[in-house]
Length: 103
Image (tube, rainbow, N blue to C red):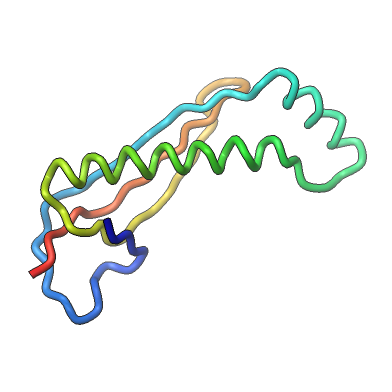
């Protein structure tokens, strides 16, 4: 599945099939949360949170691709990601774009 952040596929005509999305709500691990709190004292990257958000983006992307494949898409264009805090200790990550068939 071709995923692009631009709204076209160079050199191809597109047939838009519709909006597709994938979402996941990921919670923090207590151990990672404790270590992250300690890291804020000295500064720097909080690797546990980076890993958590990378995993959440991968899951959301897979769900978006699965939805596009169900529509018979060859690609998803104009792919975007968003995130928000759903509750204390949990974040939602959403991946969305337009499923297209290449002509």
